[in-house]
Amino acid sequence: MSLEDASSLEPVNNNPQHIAIIMDGNGRWAQKRFLPRAMGHQAGVKAVRKIVEFCAQQEIEVLTLFAFSSENWRRPEEEVSLLMNLFLVTLQREIDKLNENKIRLQFIGDRTAFSEKLQKIMSDGELLTKNNTALTVVVAVNYGGRWDMCQAFRKVAEKMDAGLLASQDITEHLINQHLSTVGLPEPDLFIRTGGEQRVSNFLLWQLAYTEMYFTSILWPDFDQQALADAIKSFRSRQRRFGHTGEQILNQTIPLEQL
Ligand code: FPP
Image (cartoon, rainbow, N blue to C red; front, side, top):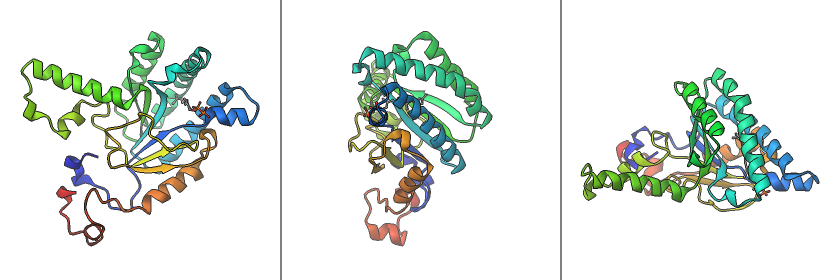
């Protein structure tokens, strides 16, 4: 949620509106079992299904999943093509079910690098589910936070070149309007599984006020209970957005200033 849009701010201890997850640990999950990494990614898809179902039950509004980063192309060619195939097969299999459950599907990232077939499945899925009002699942593919900011700044610069914007028009709100996440609330809770404690070029701009939660659980083992624990941790935190703890506790701030 941007500070300008914060009049709809949730009360302190409520559920997160938007959860963003780095699903890390598929490879190690497989290696621990002497299985090929591919099996780890397949198990990762099963975990995605469970977490999507749980978020829908919990009436979470947005779930953003980092499925493939701009840097993941550096993996061995065989693993990249396996992941592409897994996306394709998973989307083909799941889109109708998502739609039946009134779940909206969106993709963020530079999809031009994908095969035409995959791009078509992605845009067909978005079109089919665009009016759904339950959970929105945002899948970040070939996504990088720096890429997102660059493409936003480029669009703004093009409008400046065309004389449609002046430098004094550049505000946080304007940048938000040009990011790939336009229209989505900012993440309230960021989760990274797999034990690493870094953001790895995920939603860099959008995570400014997000609560961070790191767990050593490997993604395929991340289940409903693990997510409930993360949400419980989120609920125990005091989000201050620059204010003092006392101001928040005493509710002395007009909502529009939060
Ligand atoms: C990171 O684990 C995981 C990935 C790069 C791929 C995640 C993708 C999925 C779970 C499939 C999701 C599919 C859809 C359609 C949403 P890693 O391989 O880096 O694990 P490691 O750190 O243990 O090696």
